[in-house]
Image (cartoon, rainbow, N blue to C red):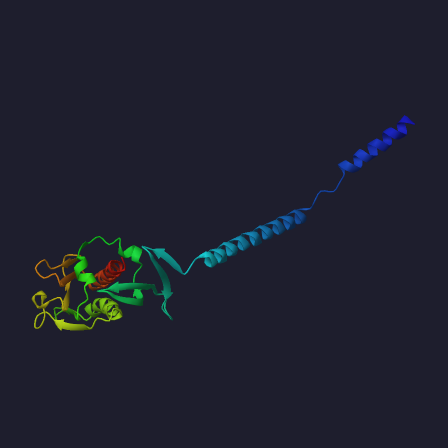
Amino acid sequence: MTDKKSKAIKGKKDKKVTKKKPTKEQRVERQVIVLIFVMIMLIAVVFGVFFLSKALRKPYFDYEGFRVWRVQLEGTTRIYYSIPTNFSIAGQEFQRNIVLRYDPKELEKIDMNFSVSDFFFKTRPQQLWMSWDPKEKAQIYEAELEIKNFATNLGIPVGVAATEYMLSCENSSAAKKVILFKISDNTRIMENEAYPNCVTIEARSYSELITIADRFVWEWLRRISG
C-alpha cells in the first residue's frame, strides 16, 4: 500500500517537472504584445497632454490691468496683441480696441532711456505731426504707422512732414505735438526739454525703431488709462 502511494506521489512530481515551457516563438509573441500595449499607452498620454494643454490655454492674458488677446493674422503665423480698453484724455472718454505688434510684457523688458512726461501723453492736441529725415528708407513708415494707428483711435488728426524742410521741435505747441524719428547709435525716447510738446524716438535699426514705436504706444495707453 505504501509503495503504491509512493509511486503515485512520484508520478505527480514527474508530471510537474515535465510541464512544457513556452517556446521561443511564444515568448517573442508575448513581448511584442506587451511592447505594442506600452506604445499605445504612451501615444495616448502624449495626445492627451497635447489636447488638454491646448484646451486649457486661454486666448488671452491679464497684464497691468488690461486683458490682452492673442490674435493670429489670417493666412500667417503672425500673432498680434489686441487690447479692448476704456480711457479718457483731456476729459474725453474713449472705448477702443488697441492693437500692438508685440507682447507688452516683452516690450517692457527693452533696455532703453524712456523720458516722456504725463503732459505729452495726457494733453490732447489738435494735431499730431510725425517727421523724419527724407533721406531715411521707406521702412521708417512702419514705425510711424504704429503711432498713427493709436493716435487715430484717439481721434487725433495725424500729419507727416520732412524735418529738413518743414518741421522741427521749434514748430511744436500745445495744439500741434511733434514726434521725430531717427536712426542713430542710441535706443531711446526723449522729450525735448525746451519744447515739451516734442518727442524724439531713436533706434539703431529700422526693425528696432518699429519695436520702440510699439513700446511708445503701450506706454501712452498705460498713462491715459491710469
